[in-house]
Amino acid sequence: MDNCIFCKIANGEIPSNKVYEDEKVLAFRDIKPVAPVHILVVPKKHYASIMDIAGEEMDITAHVSTVIQRIAKEEGIAADGFRVVINCGKNGGQEVDHLHYHILAGRNLTWPPG
Ligand code: DGP
Image (tube, rainbow, N blue to C red; front, side, top):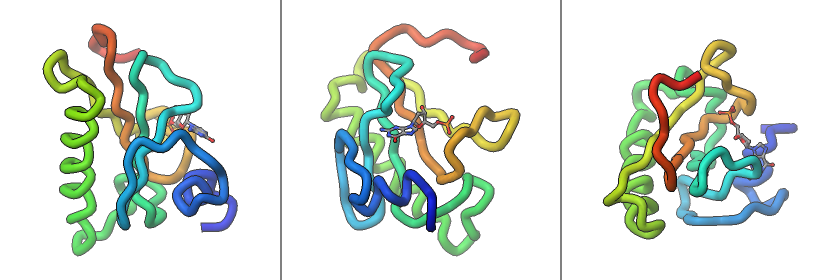
């Protein structure tokens, strides 16, 4: 999508610190990390948010879960644990309107979030 920063990162127009890539997703390190490990997993297809995925395309969510498992093993964060966050909309604190999953790890994350 025009003028979408994560579309531009996904297609290589804007560089990123890449962690994993396949034909459907790109994972890269967050530019403003809030934890020692802060990775974003982004479907290459533009979905404005989790609410924008049509029922027949929902297999992307299973694929992202598989990618998250793989990254957790490769980053060495599976044993100590981590958090996966999808911010959605205004109250969810979503700033970039292209669906992305935050993987946060490397410190004890508090609950509830702010
Ligand atoms: P959210 O609030 O869930 O929409 O989070 C957006 C995240 O995206 C935020 O943690 C900062 C990150 N981000 C924004 N622009 C860029 C960028 O150009 N490169 C990278 N690597 N991360 C970005």
